Length: 99
Image (cartoon, rainbow, N blue to C red; front, side, top):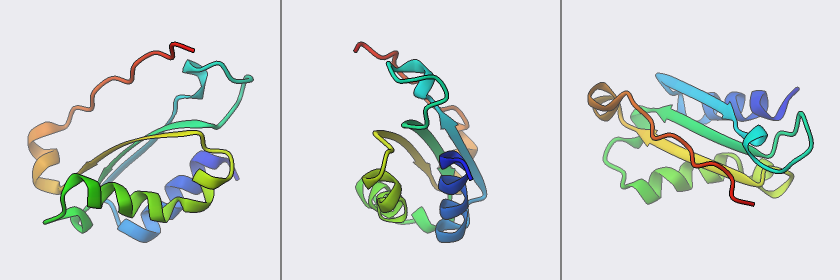
């Protein structure tokens, strides 16, 4: 199973998102072709209701602790409540790698 699929599976199980997008952005960095080291996650979950941004990110980090310790080099997180996503529905573009 790909790293992206594992990330998606774990986040679905832990946070029951109403929307989840896992984007492999490794190709934007200086890594070998077909690498799975840099990801962007866009997640909308009721689990984030009442939580500050740091607490939301901690939930995602805890869920993906194994992946972050074993090969995932970077994880960009965009965490929203359903109400926030209704008004937002747009995620900032990722910067290009400078390395």
